[in-house]
Length: 256
Image 1 (cartoon, one colour):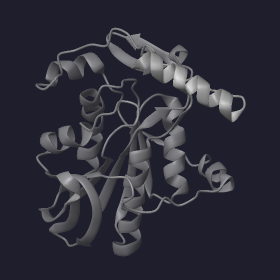
Image 2 (tube, rainbow, N blue to C red):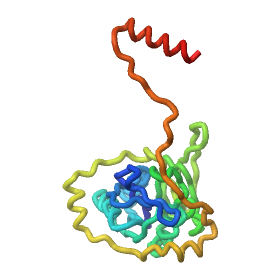
Image 3 (cartoon, one colour):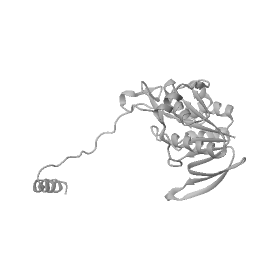
Image 4 (cartoon, one colour):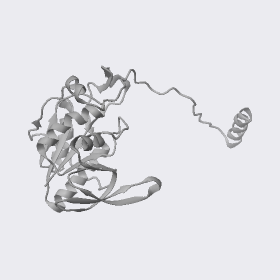
């Protein structure tokens, strides 16, 4: 049995200078990447399945050469195989389309993704993949309790803090919530050793070709990224207690 984890590289540099709009797509230039926090929990869930059931694990990442650091991190976590698909996009439907051919080649029974991307603040990738590959889907998975040759038993979050226990037929896509497994520390020495492992390359993402094939291409494009305007400000009041009290009364009196 095989499990594949879809990992996203998130830019370390979050300043506006690193953000570039390319053909309506948000891209990060000249910045190193680390693994999306939610995907790191998906990776831990896959490793727990490996340790408990002895399944074969794969980590996939779409992005430029700089995202290989994400795959080195997966190697340091002792994933069996890694694969990078060359491409540069932040649109979830394009990321999914780039991952799908590689996933079809691997043929995993379980695909794990983070419940959302911390930079995009969206959780569409797992949904796109499940639809394209006609797989079972569970969102906001917080526990994997049982795995058999034909099914997987999980718990997922519902509204209001409730949980639902579900049995999914395999193959299945699990959108994993943070906290499903404790994040294990990876030493610098282990990560340095992992960087010596060759990373297999998949086919390059051809964005224009993919756009012609996607029936669910979202009809929007990014025009600008900016910092929200300041609507309020904080003021530190210093001095003796009586002075602070008088200043507070003055401010409150003006606001009434």
